[in-house]
Length: 116
Image (cartoon, rainbow, N blue to C red; front, side, top):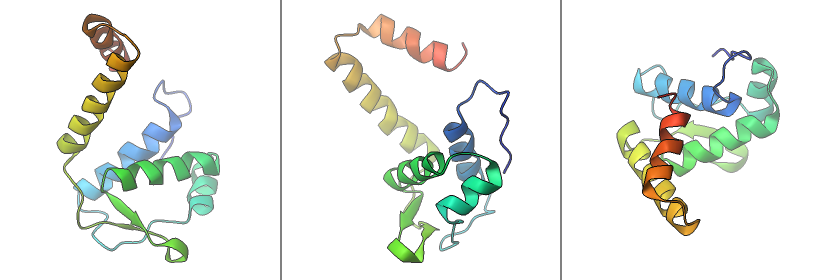
């Protein structure tokens, strides 16, 4: 994994997408143990909080499972990236509605985030 500090993509998003990419490419298989939070953070030159956040999000999305002191491992129950994105899009739409943001503005924000 490599971090591009010049990128407009957040550090946590760079780490998250690279781990998902390794899972989907078969480089990380079910049961494979991920490095400890502090170990990966030191290797990548990011804050431990960044890696911990990535691991929590990956766990919520079903890509990994945390086994306490036994570490974080690749899960056998992960959804596809599309399923994960659909869930996030639904959560985004719900939150936008709660905040009173119009559909037009919510789409504008999403397009901007995607660089479109």
